[in-house]
Image (cartoon, rainbow, N blue to C red; front, side, top):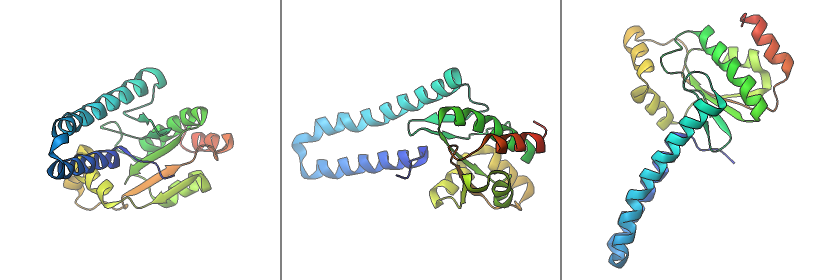
Length: 184
């Protein structure tokens, strides 16, 4: 099963709300119940998001602004802390060690590291794809660091990629090699 990330979940919730709106047009008897439900859904989603952030930071102690979501997946949210490739690899290594213990998969969106470097570091454990149009849109317009880099450099040499890492396939030797290569 393909897991949902946060952006996809938001889109599905908005689609659900629009379906409720159409349903109200045809069945006005259920208007009040659907009205309450349509406003309760985003509030519940917000509560779940806040619980995820709290759980990720207080109990799992993930580095940077990474989040552990309800699909047993850790998403790398680098925030303002990572601007260079070495920093990205360092955070990714910390996260891989944590996620290997939790048997969780890792998802990252980056332009700091090329797909060739990811494949050299992780081999078959990493799947590098191009992000969906919505994922790319959300990074370009919601990610402040990405917008700043776009304004400063105008041309980003490396393409924007989505990396999904299956930590069940990663060996301890691979993690040690990454630590030695980047002196972590």
